Every structure is written in structure tokens, then in C-alpha cells.
Image 1 (cartoon, rainbow, N blue to C red):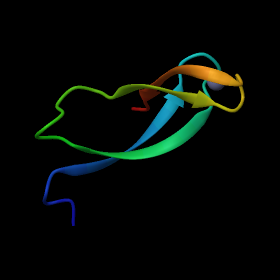
Image 2: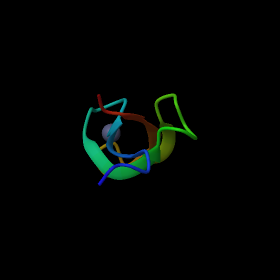
Image 3: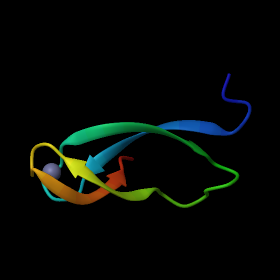
Length: 53
Ligand SMILES: [Zn+2]
């Protein structure tokens, strides 16, 4: 478990703070935090989602 470097992360809307997406990240391939533009159903538009700590 978790030996392949995969890490489950929560993607949080940077505008309203709602936790909208779950993702998994490979620490070896993506050392830095994820930032993705995704649709937020609370803001009702596409916003920047950042990985929750
Ligand atoms: Zn939002």
C-alpha cells in the first residue's frame, strides 16, 4: 500500500474553498502540488482547484 508513490489528494476550489474532487498523484512524477482548472458546482464556473494539504 502506497509503496508506488501514489498519494490521494483532495482538490479544493481556490475561490469558495469547497472540496470538489479527489485525485491521486504520483509523488515521483509530480513533486509539486497539483493545481487544476475544473468546474466548481458552488461557484458554477471553472475555477482553479488546488491540492488540499
Ligand atoms: Zn468554488
